[in-house]
Amino acid sequence: MTDMADTQKSGLVRYLPMIAIGVVAVIGAFTLKDYLSFESLRDNREALIAFRDSNYLLTVFIFIAAYTAIVTFSLPGAAIASITGGFLFATFPGALFNIVAATTGATSIFMAARWGMGDKLAAKMEAGEGVIKKIKDGIDENQWSMLFLIRFMPVVPFFVANLVPAMVGVPLHRFVISTFIGIIPGSVVFTSIGAGLGDVFARGETPNFGIILEPHILLPILGLAALAALPMIIKLIRK
Image 1 (cartoon, rainbow, N blue to C red):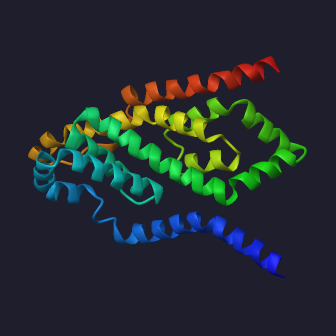
Image 2: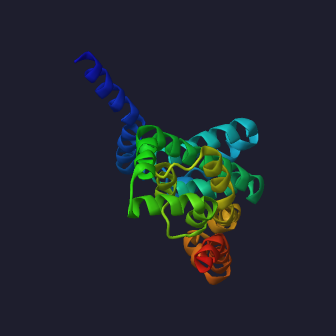
């Protein structure tokens, strides 16, 4: 009885990180949406700039920590955080700070999911037969392509792109590298929007977050996605 209780307790502990992320995400969705918004950034821009000018390194640390928390707990305001990085630190090094924070947050979700259920699910898929085994083998053969593809494709939600690799047993180093590189295009776009916020504020306008869907931005990103998928296509043709 004791061994069974210990096993059940250990199983529950493994799920605690994902449960914590889910609870904080739900609470944050209702309590933080008014604070992590463009209006909040606009109303507090002068105070933020003054604090940055007086405490630059501390501002960088706080910003990266806050952005990491937003991504880790899937809180509202990731896009606002990206443009805030550009607003406070310009396109560069703002884009670098954004990428580091987003990658760190994504890795936190990946590790929580893999620790809770990813390893077991990947092992079951590996030991399975038929279609499930073929899916697992197909993913293993094309891990790099798959990882870059889900990062480059604008339609794949960021949270999903963090969970799927954990579910199929992707190694940590591959996840981190593909995430860091794969989010560069989108991060640079949103950071550049933030870098131009001074003029937007002066005109009393709202930044155009839909710019990433405009042809001159979207087509190169889709081209990168097609390039990432090319090895998989070649393998299919050869087979």
